[in-house]
Image (cartoon, rainbow, N blue to C red):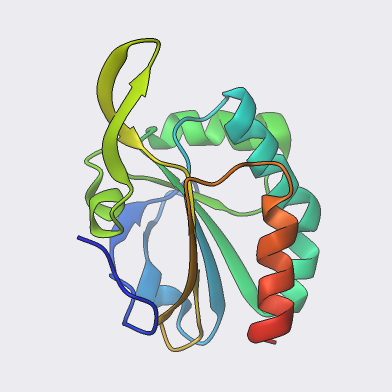
Length: 156
């Protein structure tokens, strides 16, 4: 299943590193950068998280919340946040419920092995909860800047 631009973004409720269950609908009235990534503590995911960390204040100034989602459990998210000083919520999608709703839980191939996993993707959800823009199969370098520019030009 995938959602189309302009449609209501699929809502979900997942455990977050702050000890609460967090729903996408909790953030109505704000823009949301919802980014799905494969695994805490890996090089690409660390770079991406730190890029979001470094631009966090700029997103906040544009009335935008950042939510990171991976299949890692909450305790692993907590270690990732502590190690890198991440100022935004990471959500544990261990049953890949949200990943499937957004069509990012897919068959992947790595070193000749096939397995199911997260395809790195980012979704911009507007203040009304509608999907405004998406990037799939994200290349980490320059991506956070691209997302920030999109919000500045289209949602501020």
